[in-house]
Length: 301
Image (cartoon, rainbow, N blue to C red; front, top):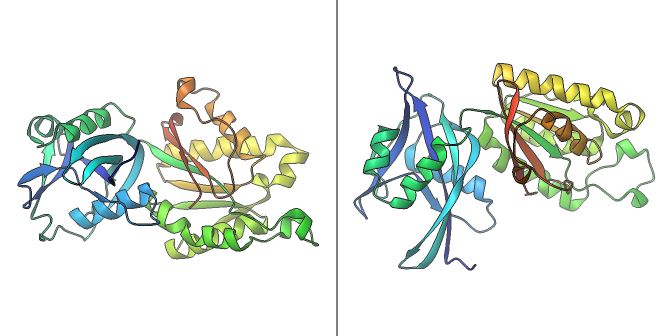
C-alpha cells in the first residue's frame, strides 16, 4: 500500500509512587488535541530512529526504547498516513519539557485516563497494544557485522578482513539506530570486521567494548559450545541486571545463538524471525527475568 505520510512515535511510560503505569501525552495547539508523541520520517532515516528523534523533540524527556508496539493508519488532508510506535521507558535526567509552537503542554496520565481522553482512536488502539505487550523488558541486540571486503579480495588472514566502503558507511550509522536502547555494554568478536562495526558507537557512548574470541566465527567452528554457553550467560546477565547490551558477531554464529535463547521461549512460531542476517542486520532479543519475551528484526542502516 502507498502512504502519503510515514511517521513514527513512542509510548513513553513510567511507574508512579503507587507502581501504576503512566504515559506521557502531549497537547498540540494546531489541532487542539492530546496525543502520543510522534512525527514524520525524514529522508534516509530509519523508522526506529525517527520515533526516537520525534519523541525526544516533542517531550524533551530521556527514555530507553523497548519492544515495538505496532502501527496504525488513518486518512489525513495529505493522504493516507501510517505511524509506527515503540515502547519507551522514561529515564529521569536533568532534562525537562519546553513548550513550543508544535507542542505546548506535556502531562503524565494514568493508562486508564489516557484510554478515555486521548483525542484519536488510533492512539487509544496503540496504547491498548502497549499495555498488552512485554514493554518492561530489556534488549539484547544480536548484530551481524557490517559489510566486509569479500574473502576473494583479501590476501591476509580472514580475521583481519576489514569493512568495505558500504560497511564503513553502515558502521557510521549504527549510533543513530542503537542509541535508542540506552546500551550499557558492548561485546564484540575479535575479528576486525566486527570491532570496526561497533567502535565508533562505542566511543560515542563512552563504553569500552568487551572483545572476546568466544563469539568469533573461528572459535565457533572449532567448538560450538563456547559461543552458545557465552550467549546464555550474557542473556542471564542482561535479564538480571537489566542493562541493555549489544553483541556483534558473525552469521554462522548468531542464528545458533538465537536458537539457544529461544529453546525455553513460549513465543509462537509466527513471532519468531526466519532465515539469516545480512551484513549490518540485527535481531533484538527482549528479556524479562532471563526469559525471551519478544524478538524483533532491524535491517542494516
